[in-house]
Amino acid sequence: MPTLTDQIFASGISLNDFVHIARPTDYSQSDNGSSYKATIAQLIDSENCCLTSGIYTVSAGTIDFYGLTNQVEFSVSGITVFTGGSSNCINNFYTNNIISCNEDLFVQPNGVSGQDTFFGKDSAASGFTITHITENDGIGGPNSNITKLGLNNLFINSRSTIELYSYDKSTSIRFYDNLVSAAGFFKNFQEYIVLSYSNTVSNSMTLNSNNECGIMIGAISSSDNSNGDYGVPDETFISTIFSANGINFISTSDTDNGGFIRFFAGCSPDNIDCAGKPHIHINGSGTTKGFMSVGQGSSNPTSWLDICFENTTNGYQHLRLRTSYTPTSSSDSNGNIGEISWDDDYLYVKSSISPHTWNRVSLSTF
Image 1 (cartoon, rainbow, N blue to C red):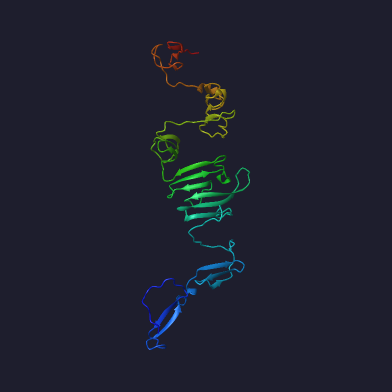
Image 2: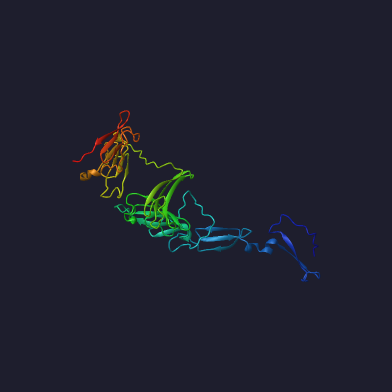
């Protein structure tokens, strides 16, 4: 029986190296016990314990699995290429990374009307949803395949194409479009809507520059009875905030059919009662640039201030000086050149002739 050497660790061991196996209770070779040798590969069953690689052969529909000695250990046959479709789908797929083979990565590119694509948690509490629908524009145009994007919202509003909710759904931002589902609600233009569901006082949208100056656009709730700085219940407002000095209404167009600022009160521009009839119109082009007309009916002022009223029987409503004032004398220092005042006896005008005194015209009945 060979004598064991000192217990020194061997280096450069391979699966084909031998090891010494002593069996003290086996007396078939010696009264002191039997001795055998075996390769390391035999001891660990390297072929069956460990797989190092696999090769898929498309033509044969098989996968061959290889062991540590690079020999085929077993094969799986009857494998077909995955083609998708409702009858051939993976219900659950777990992976850490999804990487595109080229520059584009498609997720449900053939989504049809009524299908949703969910990312994240499948609930209105988190994640985002892509809703696939087919609609027409409501004015005779063709059907279009469109998508609607919702964040923290499982079912997007039928009038929106984008609907972004905060996590607790207390506020949202919506982009409304002119699709047929809007039912004429927003007919010819698109609009961003900011809503606050938890705030019963008002809904508002704020634009600001580092909290140094800003503008707020909002609406007062009917349940707000505070009558605060922004109006009373059911009113809307545009307000400067922070240190903003004021608001500029600007029209930079200088064309024959543009270059104006208009104000409508009590009706929309396309309403039959207001169509082409602004209540205030300020020209921004041509020789009448800066001319302003007041009173419904005139979009072509002919003087710096043009007071217009279409119903001539009510011409007395054109101009009113509500409060009377009587100058103390012709040299009264109050007032500026061209200002007018009145009392029960006279009509007064501040003269432009030096020394700029008050002049008056007597009033009489007729």
